[in-house]
Length: 341
Ligand code: PBG
Image (cartoon, rainbow, N blue to C red; front, side, top):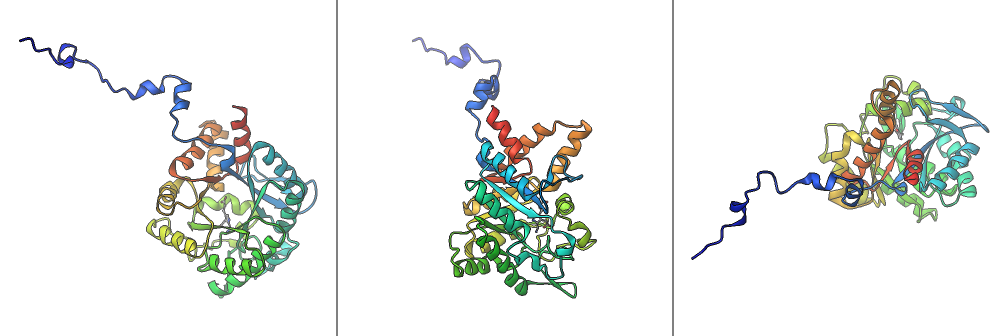
């Protein structure tokens, strides 16, 4: 009886049969099997708003980013719309004479952010507007909440943060984004907004916001570094040592009716983005913060790496980690690049 030999004995393969490189040989194949992709619709453009008209100011620690007066912010919104960027996050550069101990400019309905929201909504209504809820751009001490004898007052801060958010919502803001990290802020904001007839205003909570050294250039940009001095925000922003606590923070914000949650900073906290998305399946945003942007561009300017490629790789990494959208200072330029492909 002739027993046929198993094929692998007749023709033993000297080399691996499974070759993952097979699918990497050509660009079309790599594109075909790509698990994740970056789209303009995933990107949100933060923007620093300046007093005046026709004014722009460079920010030395953020090459390529400028502070813009409201009319130029509107021009940026038009560019964002053309590039397919869905929304802008607005941060004010409050003139020093408008800063105070309690940050009351935050609930002046004619403050820079409210004026920028109204101007954008009038000129480019299809662009979403996101406003930070926190006192730091408005206080002489640079802290996000009310301060008495060196202590942040949680519950008193909630009251004024609600007033701030109500002004933003009244100006037509689509999304309020509490970045202050006070306990109970999401519930307080939801109640205040609903009570004032703003039940469609979205709350994007900075659910897991860490006390990070990567915010340095942002504080230069809004002019709060000098006010803050050597103080820090460690009694309210989270310790970089903690991950389980980020899940508790997020769970709490969701129970208080947050519509979307955010993890911040971004790249050093990809593990947190992944865990938050996996645990809650809520729209989860990542913030590629100012220091991340600055690092990439500083190395690029030195000729030490290709800043554009490093930026795109970082943004794609957020998507891979589970982020649904990303706040990045490179949003519009990246979206324009994606459109050209
Ligand atoms: C204000 C706020 C900060 C950032 C966003 N909102 C700074 C801070 O908490 O000190 C940082 C954003 C960035 O670094 O790009 N609460």
